[in-house]
Image 1 (tube, rainbow, N blue to C red):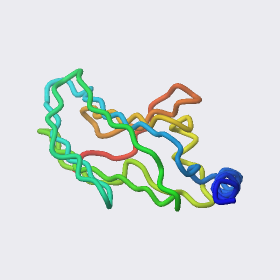
Image 2: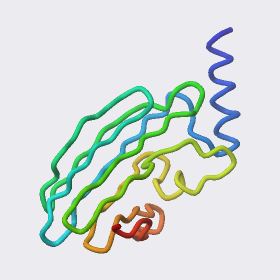
Image 3: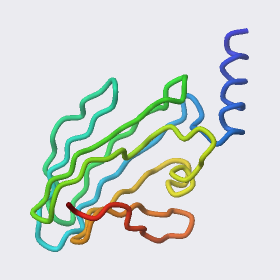
Length: 134
């Protein structure tokens, strides 16, 4: 019976566009700046992934599963000689599917460039400037 409830929750969540419980996700952060290393520190409500230094043309990634309530959220701080930023890199969406559509329902790819941080729009195979360096 409990297994049936979990599957039913998954279908309900999926029909409303939110992440499916137990769904696997990957967040990738790529440093595509021309010269600057990228200092990144990412966290969720449950996990501190620690500080990481990403060299030019290198990347850092992690995988996780969305919790049963569909409330999994990760945020990161980014420091570079180009500026500083702090924002959510994965979040629950409720009725919106903006992030999930761009992430191709599996991998959110964030790219640091000299102008700011871009998110890959996977279905269109394009990169959208989301945050300019401050």
